Length: 101
Image (cartoon, rainbow, N blue to C red):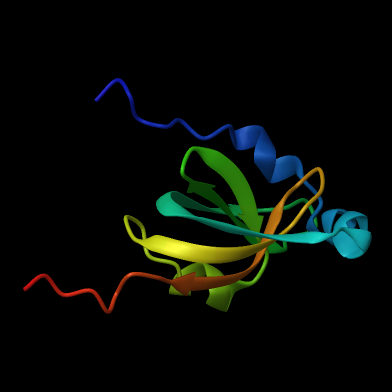
């Protein structure tokens, strides 16, 4: 519908290596939310990264295995490195064990 998220493709200009340097001193925080959207991108240095929209906020994922383990539509618990490009460094699907009676 009209409400679909159109990714801003300028994100491909981000240099993944530079972003990693920028957030090496960042503090981490815990966030929980539903993964709404995942978009695979290439940075200028050809590094692959992902843009993840979690409960309406944009995060970046530099680890391919981590990105592919995240499931759209499911609630996750995340560890985020804060900074200009907030980065997901850990993700766990939560609420899986609850089976309605």
